[in-house]
Length: 378
Ligand SMILES: Cc1cc2nc3c(=O)[nH]c(=O)nc-3n(C[C@H](O)[C@H](O)[C@H](O)COP(=O)(O)OP(=O)(O)OC[C@H]3O[C@@H](n4cnc5c(N)ncnc54)[C@H](O)[C@@H]3O)c2cc1C
Image (cartoon, rainbow, N blue to C red; front, top):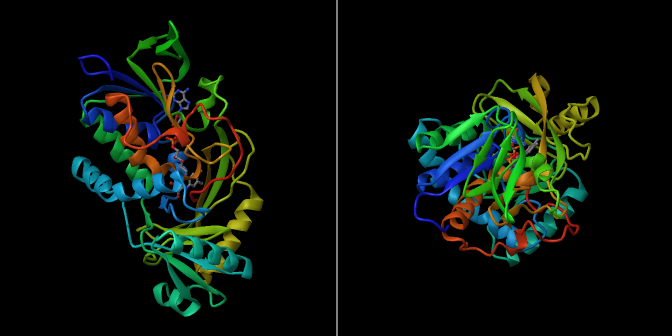
C-alpha cells in the first residue's frame, strides 16, 4: 500500500469475512472501520454449520482446493489466537470428518472422490460399514461404508465471529453496526470512500467489499456476479453427548455442537433474497437426519433457520482488486467459514504490499462469469 502513515481502510460488511479482514489489518497497524448495516455476523455467517472440509465435494486438484487446504492449515493457530485474545472459544475441533454412503449412488461418488484424492496424495481413509459404526456407534445399520477425512475440522461460526469482532476492536478497529453503505464514492477513476445511509461520506485509502450475498449491488460493472443461495438448517436437541465427527453425505449432513444440539443441513436454493424455512425442506432434512442416525427420533425439535450464501457461478470467491481503491473479498459461497483465515491473510498482503504470495488470478473479481459449480462443501 503506497503512503507512509497507516492506511485507512473501510470494510463493507461485518460477516466472518469482513471481521477476519478487519482483525488482520488492525493487527498489521491499519486504521480500520467496518461498516455493517445491521449487526455483526447476522447473515450467512451465523447460519453456517461450520464444517471445514476442503476435500469433500472437490472434483479434482485446483487452485480453489489449494486455497481451502491452506486456509484449513491456518485454522488451529487462528482459533487459538482468537481464544487467547478474547477468551471466547470458537470450538475448533480437528478430529476429522466422516462421509458416509446410504445408497449405491453415494458409494459411487465416494469411490470417485477416494480415487482422485489418493492420486493427489491427500489424506483420506476408506471405511467399511463396520469401521463407520466403530468410529460413531449407533449410526444407521443401513450404511454401506464411508470415507474418513482426518484433516477435516469444524468450528462454531457464532462464537467464532463474536471473537473476531472483539479481537478486531481490541486491536483498534472500529465496528459500526447499523451503518448501511449506499454507494461507493469515486474520484478520478479511483474509489476514495463510501456513502453511508443518512448521507455521511467516509473517505479511505482503500475500500474492501465484504458484503456477502449483497455485494453485487455495489459492483454493477463486475461480470462475476455474487448472488444469494439459500441454505436451510434444522436444529435438533439430541440430549446426549455430541458425536466426535460431522457426518456428511452428498444429500445432507449432521453437525454436533458441544451442548447436544445437532444441526441438520442443508439446502441449496436460488430463490433470490427470500430467507425462509419451508415445510418441504424441513421434512427432507429431518428425514436425512433420521436415516443417518436413528436415535435422533427421540431428539427434540429446537429451531430452524435459513441464510443466504454469497454464491458465484463458478463457485469460487472474488478476491482482489476490482479497480483502484477497491478490493473484493466476497462470493465465498459454501466455504466462507473455511476460507476466512486465508482470505484475511491475502487481503492484508494486497493492502500492505500491493501483491500476494499466492496467485489470485483464478479468483479475480474481473474474471468472466463462466459456469461451473462449487468445489467446497457444504
Ligand atoms: C445454511 C448454511 C450453511 C453453511 N455452512 C457452511 C460450512 O459448514 N462451512 C463453511 O465454510 N461455510 C458454510 N456456509 C457458507 C458461509 O456461511 C458463507 O460463505 C460466509 O458466511 C460468508 O461470509 P460473508 O462475511 O461474506 O457474508 P455474510 O455473513 O452474509 O456477511 C455479509 C454482511 O454484509 C452486510 N451488508 C450487506 N450489504 C451491506 C451494505 N450495503 N452496507 C453494510 N453492510 C452490508 C450484511 O448485513 C452481512 O452482515 C454456510 C452457509 C449457509 C447459509
